[in-house]
Image (cartoon, rainbow over all chains, first blue to last red; front, side, top):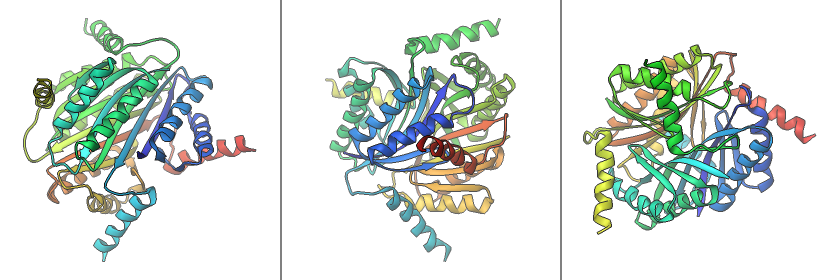
Amino acid sequence: MHVMIDLCIVPLGVGVSVSEYIAECQIIIKRTGLQSQLHPYGTVIEGEWDLVMGVVKQCHEKVHEMGAPRITTTIKMGTRTDREQSMQDKIDSVVEKLGTENR
Amino acid sequence: MHVMIDLCIVPLGVGVSVSEYIAECQIIIKRTGLQSQLHPYGTVIEGEWDLVMGVVKQCHEKVHEMGAPRITTTIKMGTRTDREQSMQDKIDSVVEKLGTENR
Amino acid sequence: MHVMIDLCIVPLGVGVSVSEYIAECQIIIKRTGLQSQLHPYGTVIEGEWDLVMGVVKQCHEKVHEMGAPRITTTIKMGTRTDREQSMQDKIDSVVEKLGTENR
Amino acid sequence: MHVMIDLCIVPLGVGVSVSEYIAECQIIIKRTGLQSQLHPYGTVIEGEWDLVMGVVKQCHEKVHEMGAPRITTTIKMGTRTDREQSMQDKIDSVVEKLGTENR
């Protein structure tokens, strides 16, 4: 099962700056070779369910290893059986509608 | 790694009523024997990471099998290494503070 | 417009224990008289949109006043025009299906 | 109070394709002049709290007007009093750490 997730990991108990933890998660994500896109409030990742969810677990393990005693994460996840739709397809689909309506 | 999640599964393409899908997910959750609590906007589940996340995958598979061509799910998930904290502990911790401040 | 939200406020930069902040938010919510239900990973609140969203803003203001320099909040929010549905209605709808399927 | 939100609006009861609804929301967001960034699983918007949350309300109203009888939305929202941080600042902060660690 293919899944697209929007992952936002928030370490607690390490002060207000969390970017070093997010950067380590980016490294983990990149190493898997999964398609991903960093945005200002999370990272969208797509691929086979077990690989993608494995990445989430690895990120939690890593962020704890780095010293965060507590983590709260928000994930949106989408699956569909009607057709394949990549991250770029989703963007294109909205932009195309925008083009039509702005004419 | 122990995890507590708040799971909200939303089937798309099946009309506005989604309770029969949520009910099937409740059955899956109950069968695992994991601690869980249904609330008006999701279900909180706690236990070992792989078991809990396995339940999420089973729910997606089941909801697709039931005919939903698309699913979008929102999950909040918390892990901590400093101490154990059950669902009831979290509630108690807030209620205890409330008691003190309401005196 | 009536809305039901699931509110999870997470103060950052104040250590791992956040229950005192959540308790203050509970007091704010209760004072409004809006229907609400605390669960282990958030609070479900329902009522008129502006009142409900006003509560969210007051909670952020209060948590900052209490000393949290940063807050990250996750909200699920539902509106519907087809019919009214309370928090209890949502629970009942799932439980009723469960009863039927468990026969 | 300045806020950054990640907004993901999901119309229910209108089939599996929701991009036309998202496109209308993009038009509403753009009209406000608020900084925003569309990504594959939502749109990040930043600005003054009341303006940003007003946009969310307008989007719900519009999507209902377009015929969706039910909407479920997921929002992540961040506020901070310690310093200003734009959407680009957040990205830069992570990318900078990545640069250092990849050396």
